[in-house]
Image 1 (cartoon, helix red, strand yellow):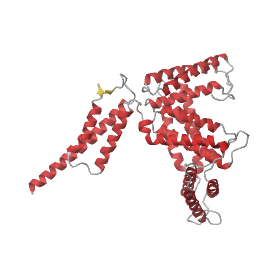
Image 2 (cartoon, one colour):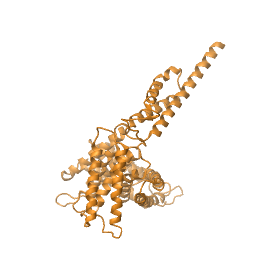
Image 3 (cartoon, helix red, strand yellow):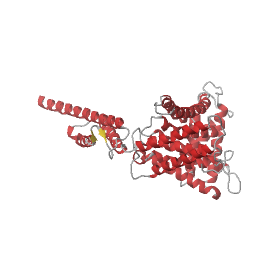
Image 4 (tube, helix red, strand yellow):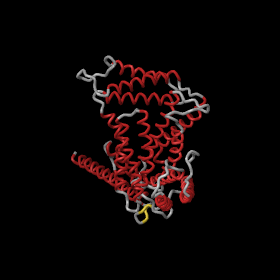
Length: 447
C-alpha cells in the first residue's frame, strides 16, 4: 500500500474497485480515530457489507486469470485488517471476520520463530490453542458470512497450522533432559535481550546470566549433554548449538553495552517506543484498549519487518546492519508482535460500549471470590457495599437490556451472565454469614 514497488491494477474494472476500496479504507480509518463516541455495530456491519460486495465483484473480474498481487490486494488487506479489529471492538470475537487480523499476527510470529529457530514448547502452546479456536470459528461460520471469506480465513489458518506443525516437530524430537535445558536457554537468551533494550543497561545482570550459561555448559561431557543412562540424547547438537549462540550473544551484549550505531538509532528508538507502548497497554488493557488501535502498531511493525533484505537492514550507504543491531531490532519486533497477539486473544466478547460495566463486574466478582476464599464474612452487613454496587448496575438495565445512547450493544448475554454470577456469590456469602451468626447465637444461648 505504501510501497511504489507494488503496481497498480492494469484492468480498468480492478482500478474502479481499487478506488472504492481506498474510500472504504479511509472511512474505516476515520471511524477508528473518532474517540468522541463508541463504535456501533451497525456502522461496522454496513462497512463490512460494502467491502464484501467489492470482494464479490473482484472475484468475478479475476475469475479466469491471476496476474499476481497489485495495490488493490494491499488495500483490500488493510480493509479486512481494520474490519477484523472492529469486530473485536464491538464484541463479535467469535465470528469469522474477527479472525482475519489475528491470523496475520500469528503468521508473522511463526515466520519469525522459524527464521530465528529460537522457540520453546511454551511458545507454541498458546498459538496451538488459538488456531484450534479459529479453525472451529471458520468451520462454523454463520450463514450470513460469504463462503469465500470463510475459505480465505480457513486457508490462512491452515497455513499457520502447517508452519506450527514444523516447529512442534523440532521441539518434540528433543529427548530428556534436553527439553528443560532448551527451555532454560531460550529464557536466558530473551532475558539478556530485554536487558539489552532497557533505558539503563545493567552489565551485572547480563553477567549473572552468562554465569548460568557456563554452569549449563559445565554439565556437558566432552561437549555433549548426557542422559541418566549415560547416552547422548536426541537433539544434543541442536541444544549445544543454542548454548553456543547464547554464550556468543552474552559476549556481544557485554561488549556493546547497549550502544546502537547512529545510522540505526532512529529505527531502534521507534521500535523501543512501540514495545513500551504495547507493554503499557498490556497492563491497562481492560480500561484503555480499543482493539482498532492495534492496527497502527501492526502497520508500523510490518513496515520495519518488510524493509529487511535477506533478513537484514541496510543503512543509507547500503551497508548491512551488524549482528548486534540486527538481533536487537529483531528482538524488539518479535516482542512487539507477541504483545499484539496477547492483546488480541485477550479481547473480551463485549462491545466497548459495555466494557466499563463489564470491567466493574469482573472486579466485583474477583473481590467476592477473594472474600469467599479467605473465609467469608462475619456479618451480612459487610456485604452492603457489594450489594449496593450490584443493585446500581442491575438498575441500569431497560427491559433487561443494557442500553447505551439508545443502542443495544453486543455482549448483552456475557454482561448479564457475569452480573448473575456476582449476585450468586453475594447470596452465598450472605447465607454463610447468616448461618455463622445463627450458630454463634445458639452457642451463646447454650452457655
